[in-house]
Image (tube, rainbow, N blue to C red; front, side, top):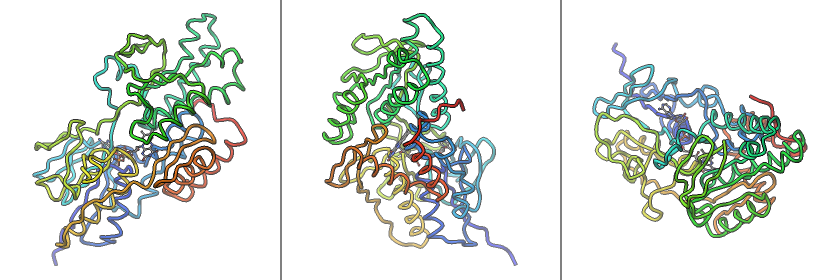
Length: 417
Ligand SMILES: Cc1cc2nc3c(=O)[nH]c(=O)nc-3n(C[C@H](O)[C@H](O)[C@H](O)COP(=O)(O)OP(=O)(O)OC[C@H]3O[C@@H](n4cnc5c(N)ncnc54)[C@H](O)[C@@H]3O)c2cc1C
């Protein structure tokens, strides 16, 4: 008796879209001998990006921001391929990775995004970024080394340059990171380095627009500015873009030079690039244009989600690159794939934002859920609770709670990793 070939559903990327798609795929397709659900990812772990700024500033330990894919998603996929996706042939239905070629019947493209530097001279070469676990670890080491070096030099100008930290970009990542950095320096490093050194340390945030958090409401813009400038004493430069980044400076469009060894670029994201063998429509940011069911037009078996997709919501325009969108688009893709396979009509991906949150250091955050706005301790508690719920496994939730609880009573971790 001949064995019928299984149909392969291949998910590229084990991030927010991929993980939530896999979960729903398993629910819809079950442990079915007719289908094989497979995942390709460049790392063997799922990265919880909203906690990256806390990893970079010693608020939580490295291992608590990641979850091994084979552990947390083992029930959702039948096969895992560790490798970097290099090309996709939509006609032949083949994905080529750094290690193998894999055919598919259905494809989910969910490789996320990388930093985008807007062709600013030197930005990519000299800036630190905060997109991956390696980025966060590199930053943490760099903060420590900058203080160590500054403590050893007698040259005042060099000391100042070492302790001048410039965050480029006033979006949520820039605002959250700048707040945590300032707390790391004033509340933790102050215990181990001299008072003079800590006083010299300055965090500066540069934003080319007129406000911080431009994609948020006036409430967030006003309160975040107040918190950064008045509470944290961070220097916020608005309405001035970055013209050039060098080894030891950031030059602004106004001509102002900020002397620093630490430019941190959080100003833009661009989708991960994949080499398609066929031409695929992209928007001006390079995201793949998809229809209302998240499919690439002309390739009904190929779905794109999360930061890679340009999905136009009839009410809200192109959806933003957030985990909130990604974690809802993933399941919507899985449901549509199941409908497609069963000859049913597809459903439009209808996204409604639940709320917005930004942390502003320990004990302080801003949150908006529907029309209700919160600031301060309650918002901070809400921020933490929601992210805890979103972490995938129970042991990880517990470990993060322990990290945070210890953090309340002690200083951050400043060991070199
Ligand atoms: C520091 C930071 C903080 C953030 N905070 C928030 C927040 O508080 N709230 C919020 O809603 N959003 C937040 N975001 C945005 C959120 O992380 C993204 O919108 C979300 O992760 C997008 O999901 P995704 O599935 O498209 O991509 P990702 O979650 O990034 O997943 C992509 C996956 O693909 C893998 N991959 C990439 N390239 C390849 C390749 N070539 N081959 C194989 N695998 C590959 C990656 O390793 C990753 O596992 C934050 C982002 C950052 C960087």
